[in-house]
Length: 82
Image (cartoon, rainbow, N blue to C red; front, side):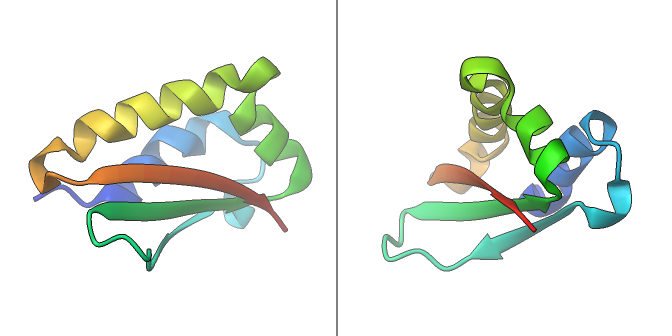
């Protein structure tokens, strides 16, 4: 079984400047077939993780959907600034 929080953290860590402010949390979802992951970082790093026109966020979500295939659940990744 893949630790999805750690996988997402490992994907995001090289992209941010302040690694101490980076955290990934699993939240409960109203849908039992969904895994909800929140990435928390400072404002500048969140902007970097989302990218222009959301291109970086889309790529991170695609990578995580591949990692979550073993779970047979849909994965949602949200980005929040401190």
